[in-house]
Amino acid sequence: MACIKGASRSASAAFSPVSSHLAAGTMAGAVDLSFSSSASLEIFNLDFNSDEWELPVVGECPSSERFNRLSWGKPGSGSEEYSLGLIAGGLVDGSINVWNPQKLIG
Image 1 (cartoon, rainbow, N blue to C red):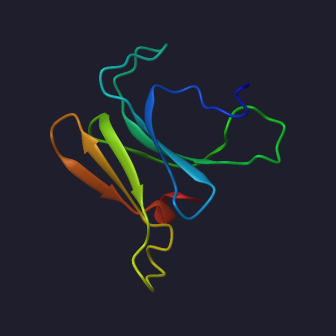
Image 2 (image 1 turned 180 degrees about the vertical axis):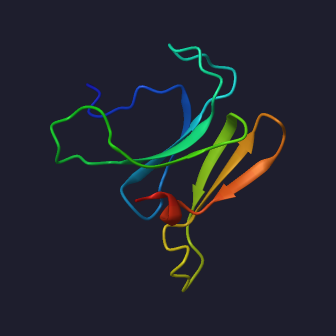
């Protein structure tokens, strides 16, 4: 089976449970082609109507550390502020950070 879409990243990934988005957090223990030590959380649009292979980034924010794990959970009932749910990341330093993807998507 052929790959239909992608993003050239060394990342932990999580699908949105309520929208056509994918979250990617810079993976711990991986070195990219630029040898960068930076870390970020990116949100990609899963646009299957486009002929482009590369998924478009629709939101991004820096992270204090790289990611060991990433999870995207469903929103609570009746919460408009968190209508896209929440993204939780387990970071290299042992901390867990939580993001509101709705605020990251431009």
